Image (cartoon, rainbow, N blue to C red):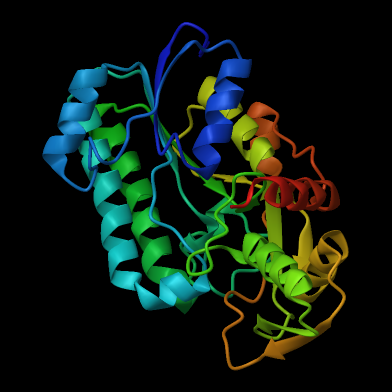
Amino acid sequence: MELMNKKVLVTGGTGFLGQHLVEELRRKGCKNIITPRSYKYDLTFADDTQEMLLDLNSDVVIHLAASVGGIGLNQKEPGRLFYENLMMGVNLIEECRYTVIEKLVLIGTICSYPKFCPAPFKEEDLWNGYPEETNAPYGIAKKALLVMAQAYKQQYGLNSIYLMPVNLYGPGDNFKEDSSHVIPALIKKFIDAKEKGMGEVEVWGTGKATREFLYVEDAARAIVMATESYDGPGPINIGSGVEIPIKDLVSLVQQFTGYFGKITWDTSKPDGQPRRLLDVSKAHKEFGFQASVSLEEGLKKTVDWYGENRI
């Protein structure tokens, strides 16, 4: 699919990933990009979703809108995260079958994988166990949308694809203390501690859990490549294929923020899933995606951006 002359609607298009995706679409020559706002169209309501699709009359819909957060928010508001993510996706898929669109791109999450999934996670392992408890409601809501999309493709011919990005980070990330993910949370914590002259910083968990991270510009590029070139029914992992223990990540963030105080690990707090590492071979095989920004390079860019743009 050539996107240059298509009208592309991006839900969540003003958010963290959305802003980078819009830039990538523009770089590819796409001139007609629409980023509807939630105050006008609340996708948790079917009527608003229908109105959005009828009003904006798009060729391609890329669904990025989501209610997300780190372990703390997932523990505090699991019901809201389940409901809002499920309803936004359900309403969008249902209304897209009544609207003449060429393609629907759904963004899932690797939180949907089983807690003790063998690493690297392969797409076919998605149903082999229950997700890690702290983010299971979010992960299951997203996984249900994969089932719905596959069922609608089978019954109604709705052309949709489902992508599962690993943990994203980069310029423009959410640095709010109550809802940020691990990388922006650490960057803010260390810079604040450095400026306040604090000799010690507390970090959740044991540091033994591992994570894989993908720079947000790489993620945006992957989504555009898949939109152009992939039409299969199965989910596809989007990641870097590189794993790092949280303890080592903390050391890197310390280095790039220039904070060298003592780190105290609060082991009463959860680590989350023990390991996260994706098998990214399918994305490379199906549409040629490979991450290009290393974690070290991406972290430096993110720290520099936060230093220049924080309020």
